[in-house]
Image 1 (cartoon, one colour):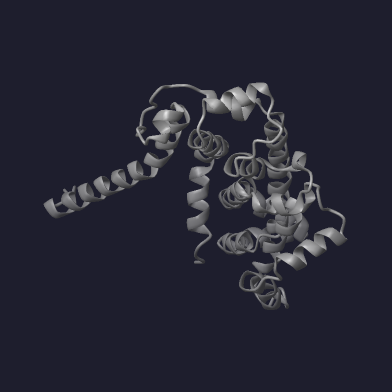
Image 2 (cartoon, rainbow, N blue to C red):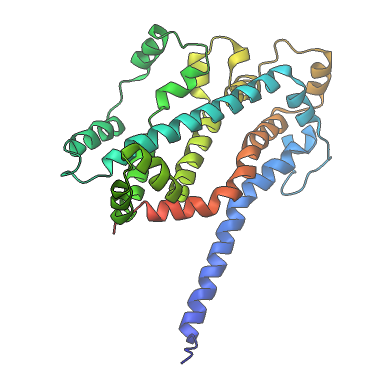
Length: 294
């Protein structure tokens, strides 16, 4: 028997669709506005004449940012950081979450280690002790200073732990019967079945590494080793004009700080905008499945 939705149900669905559409437009509006400002003239941007369409269209702000060799170097540093950092974060998360997903009668010290990691979310050692550790270990001014402090993401561990606990125990028992150990069971059973969860923690790690800028300022003494966000913060936000060549100087005469900031924001967001659509379905599924245990 086919049940037709009532008038109240139709109105409720219509309201939901209208509300979600309004929220989507509200989320897209700032990004479209920033893009329009980045392609507008300095006069129009400075006078607040730009809304959703460029006024006095030009791409000189991008020419200024992309012309700098330091920009390309910092971009490569960020790519290297994201690649290494995401790989290490995922490996550490998976290897730590697997034993913590066991029951207390299987892994005797499970509760102790869960609290051992969770307490780091509540309390931190502070910036100065962390800097001293980086200095004593000799990783300052290297890409490892950007990766190692966050090598073990506790939130991702908790998410992956709960995701592993949703997988049927019969699969693990079958693997043990076939002669597989814990290591083989993890990589041949758990990991292939955990693509949504792994995609979720990978996206969280990728976004975190790409957007981070403060640690680059703290741990890097050579500006050539800055990641992209740190470079843009020093050159664009602080409007550091030292070391400009003639071409940059000419461009600066025709640009405003607002158009340069807009170009910086859009360039920094572009890689994530290109990657996220391909991982969105896994991200949503991973968060939902990893949030509860049946």
